[in-house]
Image (cartoon, rainbow, N blue to C red; front, side):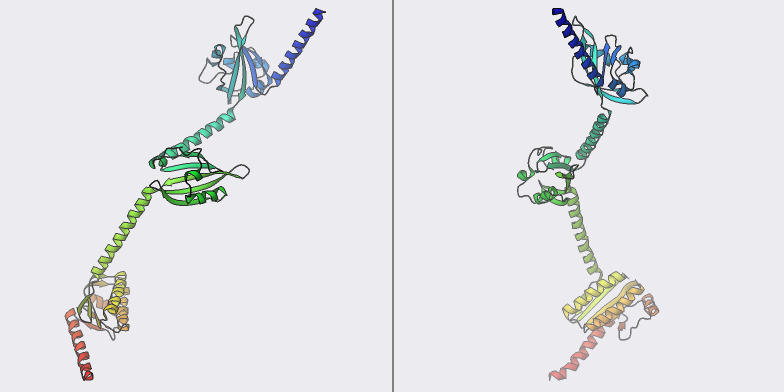
Length: 398
């Protein structure tokens, strides 16, 4: 009876062992065993599929010859003396020549005396995962290089406005620690800040761009909604650029431009000085080359001076003008006409021969325009005219 019970137990043990063997054979992991001499003693179907070698090709081969570990020829032998459960990630050449990355776990096998008789290994191909991890690390390195090189802060918040990322060289320049806001709510840190309204719009799906000043620094800020695979917003990515230097440079350039404009105005006023030589008599001595732009300035300044002073005569002295272009000569005639419309008389003096030739070549009509040889003659003309007007008006007063 006892022998029958023992036989039954042995049968159950055999059945259980057979069941476990079938489970291991069908497992998705590559499972193998090798002895103290590194000879492969077991090799399941997953190992055949993942590594390309059939069971018949693998059994009896040395594991370090069939699956050499790149850069570490004694890796498999070391497992005979190691109990560390941490997985090993090794690169192997599969049958056919292509390489694959495997993650192996192992268990040392003991004989009846408790001595190590071999090693059982369990592995999975992690090539795709390793490539993804490598690409992710490369992207992280690129992001880190950008944030630590440029005057920038890259940050992110979740849908509740809690910082999940905060890194960048510009944070340090503003007196902040990189990452010091992580885990904190932007709405609590910056209560009533005008940027919060834009952030809420970004959390609602509207990207934003703005400029602001804080911590003594001028910033240009972009806020970009981040969506998951279903298209739902789960946070906002922010890029904040320190533009203090650019702002200062812009302000400096504006100041310089304003100074240049003031200087140019002074130069224009000096180059076209309007002198009141007599009560009711203005003179405008002009020197150098008279071009269209300068003539336009002359027209504006002289007409404004005539209106302001109530002058009766305006003398355009061209004695120092070496050259005029055809358009400028036309402007001068128009200027005399404009002076006449204001109730004053325009007098041109000191026309040189080349300027006279330009006027004649254009066929400009100087009829009704007083032209005299020099400024003295013009002043005498004005005095005579004013004397006549005074004499004509005297009897009327009696």
